[in-house]
Image (cartoon, rainbow, N blue to C red; front, side, top):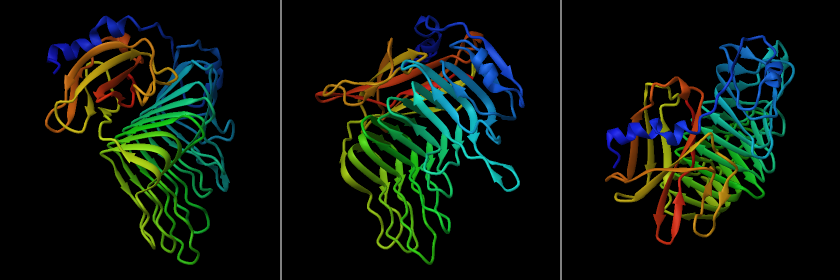
Length: 396
């Protein structure tokens, strides 16, 4: 186990400090032209959105967008677009990204589109309104990491909360909810991931949209529909409910492994199944979670990794300003590794509850503010190496 001194040293050590880079912080007041500020900033800079409503924008270079603030409630542009170089990383921290009624009788349609590069959403709430699209659309070759986020499907068009095609997704400590159908619409899924790519999830609750029509049987939606390699740990998936139609399956997957998770089929006639397709239980997988949502210098923080019992040795890896596009080393390492330039940060065993906890106080250093880092947990399970979903966060 880590001693308190070693825990404190984790973030105070040269492992992290040596990777820190100088950043210019650009404060932006509500009503200002966010796009103009973004265009004038350099890669690695921080755009600090002051509290209030801001216009949406297109991001074409690596930088961090920090709130708390709201993106939305505007006519144009309607979408937040992340279009980065393949190794680019954009971070969105403490933002409410939504589309709302701009004027009486007018609805501005928009969502978040990640077309290339890697986007990290940390402590964000996202709801879009766009027919035939998700609140977050992830395009082929792109990567998205969610930590402590609330993502909601689109009503009444039936847009899923998150859609990904040939892309890689990681979610930790998230709440993802598909949209209910209403009286005339269609229900939507929490997550749809298709093509090639991966979905890695821990400590999440995902719920499919329900239907409440008492006249026409409208099908509810699955919590997760996936044709990519999928790993789900310590999570709850709920299929959508229906008054007249069968309840929805919680997890419909082509190749999924689950551990310590609940798969609840939706209420209906009949009740939906917990899973369909190829879903297997792999209790050797390890999970990950962190608290609080907003980690700040001088404040306590906790990271935890979960296993199927006590005495599981978990090594921790630290990476500064990661993640990078993921790599899967099969068959030795089954899950994706997202970071490069990782440093060994220590190892410890799970306790009687199957949990290994790392608690420390974030050093009260000005150089840490707005810096980003990632932590991995790695455990050996027989002949394979299990990797927890990456915990990627920005110090507020």
